[in-house]
Image (cartoon, rainbow, N blue to C red; front, side, top):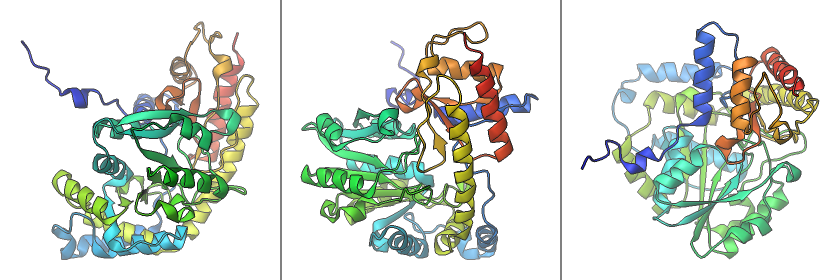
Length: 401
């Protein structure tokens, strides 16, 4: 009997849909096609100069040529604790911080540390593509709480309670949201946090888009809003989105000391310390002012308004106004089954493929985020490319028969 070459656990992991779309778009561009990509959630701005200079100096420092503590540079851990108090009012000390190789490692280590096989995690859909895989790798069971455009992709306490069982161990809470841009009001955050505390649930909260909110929307940390959650909150964050540092790969996990110690033990065997040069850059980022962030947010806000207006002008497309992050998540359900370029797509995945081939625009279909019938478009790209890309989509979809 032939044994499988790849383990069942790893074989079950799906490729990152957002990175796959981005890779295909880049390959088509390399082949000479004028593809515009709305796939990857990556700011189009360079990392601010003062952060880059800090990295250059770190390269020259012999201290950073050696191993450093697996859990992060002590000065960076303290700076992250200080930044967390500054930005969200949540007081922690440096021993409650684990510096990770990007936000994805923080997500994985959080669930690997908290979950035993069979433990259930409530996940609001649409959800970011990495969450299900991290939960699955930890042996956990994802329970979807599905939202749609009629509620602005916000889940209610009643929906969460309907999904809770005796096996529910944690709630994954994300605001602002990737992929929808939904932002929960302070009142909604408090209500959900009190519900979780009442049922003695862990809350894993991803706050990586905390500085990217628009209009009257405001970020509210569930850890601060509901002190009753006590030591059953794990906060995930990083420098990637706020400081245009996606390639630097620095994230972090904040939690109770026993969880952080266990996650640090895991990291000590998986990767050891994060690159010291990247940690030095992150230190400059989190201790610096937020003026560069404000300039980026202003550009994102302008692009957000343009994209939403243009999408809602397309017959059959419904796009709620995102309040945070840098994504729009329009419904295209009314267009499925219509004829485009001689084909009748039955799913948003099929429609996205046709748009890429015919209109040369890369979109991520809703199937990747747990809700078929939608697209995710990032507006973290230049204004001209944004207008050109959405115009191509509008023209193509406008020819539906």
